[in-house]
Length: 87
Image (cartoon, rainbow, N blue to C red; front, side):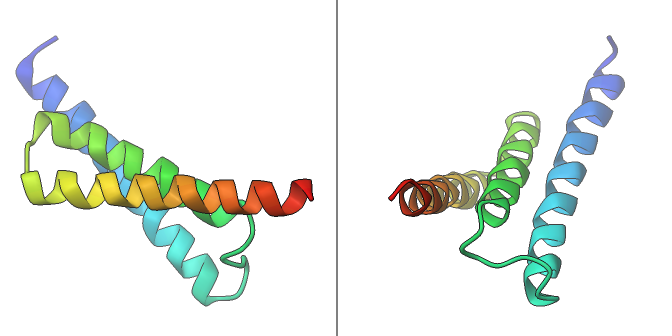
């Protein structure tokens, strides 16, 4: 696979991640989903992971840090929803 092809794959991965994060926020603001439903932190987790994957190719320390926090907070949100629904 050529370098250009690999770059395109990583770029598309990052763009999909960005689109998912924007979609999650739009759905929240439009009141189509609630922040305490599993879908919101799940979309945030998926989007952040995809963005983080793209950053392995196009390194940016500040972006990696924010995505790691985004992932951690999303996992916490998923845990909160799961623990609430199990009780």
